Length: 188
Ligand code: NI
View 1: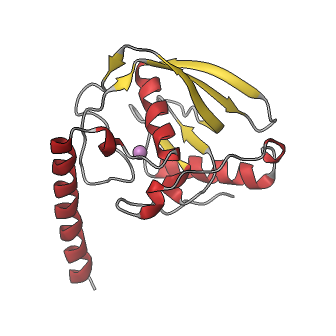
View 2: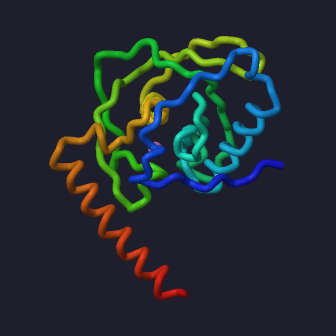
């Protein structure tokens, strides 16, 4: 039985850590499977399209995704686990997420911003059997992959904004955090 992991929230320094690769012979171990199960359960609990290790205090190279469920929770769940993932190729053409832009579970201050991403990326990753896979993702899926992969390198989506937009994001985050702290204080 897996459990919901507490979310690491910006500006926690753990979000800037670079993860370590799993030893390939460990990939099928109960520890790795347990981490993956807990991360998937946590991703669904927090209603994300993806969740990366650094966001839940795990120091290893793993992220999980569901490309369809977040758009409509009526959709069947399609969980995916990527172990030791590495983006090995990226298209030159760029894209941005339509609508409000990207958000992040570690930056939960209703702040969304458009981030320029590669239109398609090639990802190498491992499964629990220690098999290496190469898969190409494009469009929305490629955005999720790039966002989660950045987390494993200790980088948040706000780092990819213009200095002005990044400043706006941080101001808004601080304001919302102050309000949340006040409400917490008032509730005691
Ligand atoms: Ni994120």
